[in-house]
Length: 276
Image (cartoon, rainbow, N blue to C red):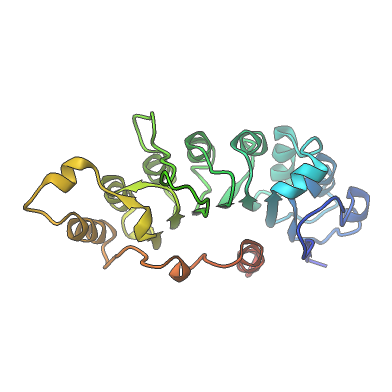
């Protein structure tokens, strides 16, 4: 067997669907999808063994409920990831994090993970600028997909990742991650001038730039200029930066990543593992 996906169709609970001992039998595995809490340091050691063919794709779903039931105590440490990537030099990782606290994400995101795609989805817990900054610094050679979704109902407005920072974390992500080809944001404040900067930094290599209209904000200087329509200027400047026509996503349901999160994970995991 070359492809193995073991994920509970229901909300992840305290059931472990496979153990490291059982995984030892799958010596030809090239693609694996698991609940993150089931992917232990011992599993990483099993997959790093020279008896196993190199693993090419690893998709991990990190769910708040799962962490509550199973904890993160047995997760791979950085040395486990290093050993795994020595045996699997072409390994790429996709992580979807659902309502995970930033402190937990900072523990999970080990420097040696060859992270190619990451998707944050929130109903309760928002991602911090520190997490985005860490991702842009650690995975600049690998990251191609970055998705940030927030459905937290907060009448005070969307969280602003650039609060108390000299540089916006999303702009730094676009600057550092030169392989970035997809960026999708909903439910976080994206300042218009930062969106223009992102488009200019990545240009036509950024194949998908999806930001919902309600997530975009303008600073007072842009709004005060009577001679320039800020929305028209934004569309024009982003389009110029990308080298193609662009506009904000008017309805969240039109986002390419808009589905029930677990369903999106399954779909993305399948496309991620195709053609290896």
